[in-house]
Length: 131
Image 1: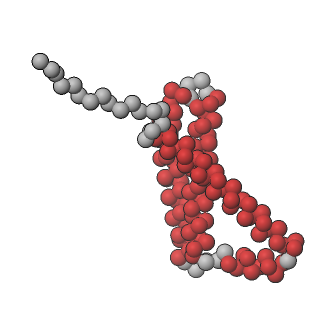
Image 2: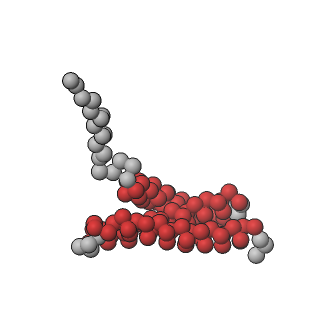
């Protein structure tokens, strides 16, 4: 008589689908985004010394709703990168950090949503009203 066995459960790797994996990926993505913003910011600010008229035209192009939405995205990126960076520092340098890393991730996400929501709300206010 043969018995049927349930198929073996696939073995999960350390990060596959785990919130820690998404935190790691978002940390890198937001870091690259912030780097490119800073690169463009330094270049357009350097235009002041090279050609003030070109600088003025560049600044005028930033005064449109699409750039305002990109600024909102930048706020979201900077806040996540900063809060998650603090979590990574705590995991690395606090003796209890690895033990509490999931709880700290949920704290980071909660703070991120609350503060980013307030920041984006304020930016939408300025975008939609005359000031």
